[in-house]
Image (cartoon, rainbow, N blue to C red; front, side, top):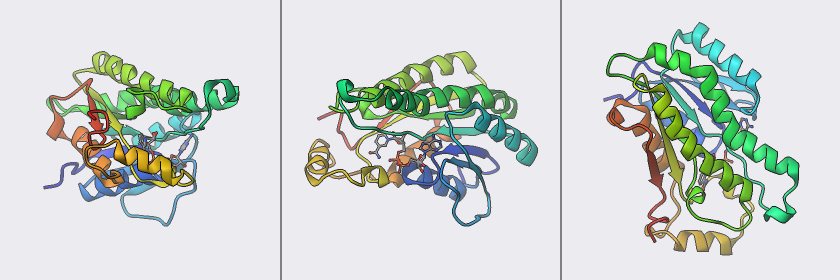
Length: 242
Ligand code: NAD
């Protein structure tokens, strides 16, 4: 059974890691996907329309909404997944790096919803709401040295998700995923000791895979979660329970 048959989805940060896994899973579930990333798209794939752009720029979202309307005539799912990390304690963090992490990590989701919520609501059926899935992190829940702006953006997304769920229900549901340590290219350059500590901090005693987050995002995107909105889904191998 295809969970997203006939649906049209936007996924940001689609070229790598969790976003790439979400695109693959959405395609496998029958969706067509507008795949947004700063990075140039790879080879053409059936069912995928790439958009190269910065999610923190309103112009990107005008292009995405226009494309959804003209190419597909609808939009059912928005997964705002792109994020950036610049590691530094607050007293060493450059102001530009603070601004960038908040812009990509938090403001981009507002720009995305501002541009897309009309289409999402218009495509919804009586019991088939549009679905927005925001991408927070367990670092919204617990401090991690060197991540002040990242954590502030991710914490803000939890509040933003609740706010948007109330604002746009019942035609649009809005939920937030909170991944724990997921092995993606974002971990390139992070040392063995930090990796070992992160994994030891989970009940699962291992990294999660991008596909395991994609499974949670697919649940929230699909009608399997029809009565779930304004919620946070933690996908962290028990990291926040330990
Ligand atoms: P990743 O680095 O593998 O991929 C991120 C993608 O986003 C890249 O393709 C990058 O080009 C794109 N991107 C970055 N800035 C962009 C912008 N301004 N506009 C458009 N695209 C942009 O990262 P990932 O590990 O797959 O993380 C995806 C999301 O999951 C992020 O929001 C991240 O904070 C969150 N997350 C990841 C982990 C983890 O352990 N990997 C844990 C918690 C939360």
